[in-house]
Length: 354
Image: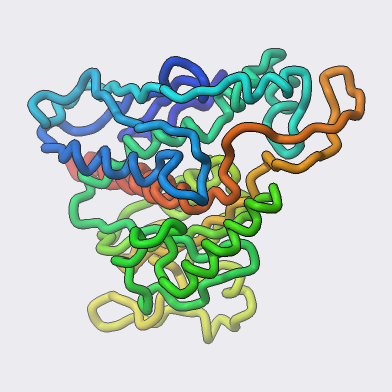
């Protein structure tokens, strides 16, 4: 199986399955001499872990990361950083009823057709459990980036959309509610909707917005490795993501060029930021902002029609512990993937100036 690595210089390779002994990864390319705050890394893991509130899956995983190499006395050595996260609360029997069945909108059928073998226990390698490894690497990338600030928050759940510009939000409130919405009033409505959806045995999608501040000018390359293109790839690699837009996005298509252009100030900054902090694929020093769309979770606690391996039409119903809405736990994943992209380009810039 290919495609288990992300990045060029700051590179993450992950391994493991949802119901295996452990998941883990190897981070290559992290410079030596970086003093790590290990508690901050674990805090990021806690933000993503299951069982953290009543509106997410109740699988109980502490998600304690264990570093095996590449760190000595809290400082990176420049060698590959190896780590594992043990799986301690697998309930594989919850998936025995789908051993010969393809769940609608899951990777079951495509995985089986491609590889001729399938780990039906929670999706195996295709499970979102793998994203815990990305959060570890992203937490280290954040510390490498130092002054660059990456903040994600939930801006939409179902039909509920937070329309306020991010500059009008108080990011300090994000971790004060289980939805991780940056507006307390909207957070209450979103939480009520998720709880109601869960009672129905159904699921709902949503949107995670991300703002990156203090970005230096010059990150990104002007052709295939545009900064926003790599951010798009990073976000679209996250499980359940169905859309990515940055800057003015689709709303910008309704503007005239005279309205959309970001005019310059004398210091090179821009009076507006419809470009979303990226022009010609290269960061221009303004805030980078983008939205990531997540579909409703595919596993429902309702009966659905599907097919089995023999092509027979059957009825199935989800069992076990699943998120009714994935976006609250996706917030740290979005931040982590953004950090990996920026760390890669930041290191590339340093190398190009040697």
